[in-house]
Length: 194
Image 1 (cartoon, rainbow, N blue to C red):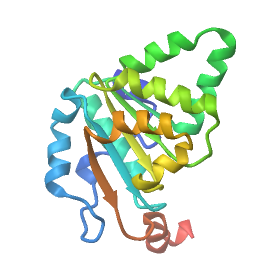
Image 2 (image 1 turned 180 degrees about the vertical axis):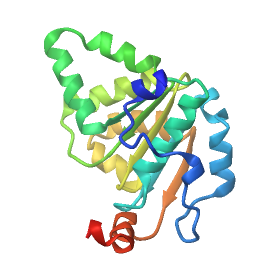
Image 3 (image 1 turned 135 degrees about the vertical axis):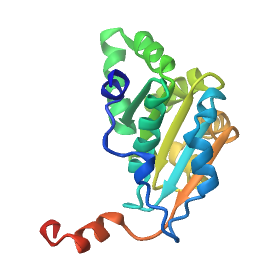
């Protein structure tokens, strides 16, 4: 309960037992089962979850976060734009190093909405610091609508993009969710939500 409260999951009710495995979603059942056992966390791998809006990326990340908490791993959910805003503030109040150390200690850091908004040079450097502190020692889940092959362009600095992506992509699992928006289907199934 303590770990779940500290995780601040956007969808705390999400759990792997409720995962919608219907065909056409792009879910690899064997990979999901493997992720559920937590070995990827013990091995400090990243998980990259991609797909169009509404395909369930955030929900799945939160379900895996809840699973990690159940196994005793500290977890923290944050949207990338909010993380970068909070880090920008730490530069001004002198707590930048302390904030990086806090993030580096979290077993599973969920970075939601990767690639959603443009980055300035300072944000790119901060993102590199966060990722670099975690590589080889902690796990990171990244959700993004932006296909992985476009991340380099989003980062918009060849040197920093190479550094960040080298740390993320090579020791990661990937799930690309498919299908139409689950929110749309929820509204169709529940007329009160329309």
